[in-house]
Amino acid sequence: MATTACGSSGGDDAAQKNPSFKGRGPIKYVAGKDAGGSVQKVLDKWNKAHPKEKVTFVELPTDADAQRQQMIQNAQTKSDAYSVLSLDVVWTSEFAAHQWIDRLPENKFPLDKMMKPVVETGKYRGGQYSIPHASDGGLLYYRKDLLKKAGIDKAPATWAEMQDACDKVKKLSEGKGMDCYAGQHQKYEGLTVNFSEAVNSAGGEVLDAKGKPNLDTPEAKKGLDFLAKSVKDKTIPKEATTYQEEQGRQAFQGGKLIFMRNWPYVHSLASKKDGSSKVAGKFDVAPLPGLKGPGTSSLGGHNVALSSSAKNKATALDFMKFFTSEQKARFALEEASLAPPYESLYTEKALVKQFPYLPTLKKSILTAEPRPRVVNYGDASSAMQKEAYAAMTGTKSSAEALKDLQKALQKPTAQQ
Image (cartoon, rainbow, N blue to C red):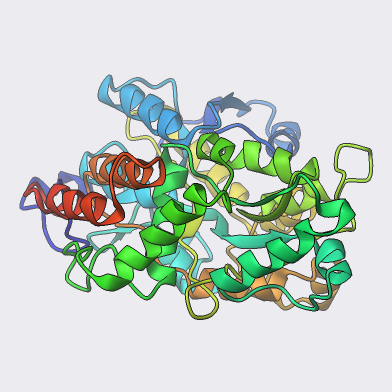
């Protein structure tokens, strides 16, 4: 599988040509489940202003792997059923290399106002193939009320501090029966993210600066050991090996977890005071913990791309400008606590007052490590999921899993 993060595939350069954006009329926006409920509201605004160019929302499953597979199937059949795609930031290279999406005119979008690492996720071989509409950085959600009662005045910066805090909270009457920590540990894309974060947060790296796998290191082993040993000693409950984002959110909101790794969208849902969250007003967020200090998030987020087989591309391009605007990013932040790609929104006083975690989130994004940006990303991610899950569930040791992953990621295929 591909392990190189840059270079030439040596293939046809047709994907680099500038397509023509012609045709007006109805289009379809394709994305994963709208957990925060903000997407349809944005589409309603567009549809009201463009009655002859309406956008229909095609809502795919929550599971990122299932989303990717459905988009690929549509692209391979050259179907025009999908117009504008919401891509995980690491899918751009794969979709661009296979000419499933069009190269976009960079000057039509305010990329200079967006955070540079976020904009870079939309590039492939010098061209801009997708535009950020929401960024993402991992955050540590924690029960500030229980930590305070246990005599802990700040969020843990290391894994050891987090485990110590759990021990103290569990001794409280309110902490009995609670689990310590969960992330996204089911064998799917979320585990690729959590595994990468663990390795990076222990001072290791999945790929080196040249794009080669670098997993036969003590640091990588310490990262995977954290996940594997945490399941074994029940710091991470066994049930959490089945968690995706939503299961973790529901467990935290239901008062079952002391700590949780998740994305910013959870903040607005967990803060609701309509009875759906038992932790509203009782939690806070902090940077992810690491081995010796604050950890490193994987860079998350979603970009919009234009299906190369879509109809009505002039409408689609206009919709993409609308959907990636600063106004829409502000709305998505206020409505669903989605991380904006625009840097200015993180320092706007009114927003920081409303969302005190914005400075923490900005730091998480700017210091985040991207997952491998490779053409055969699906193969690379599947290998990471397989080996991390084997170590966490005890079917392999961390050392064996990393040795096997090193081999899997070294298989020669087309480079980016």
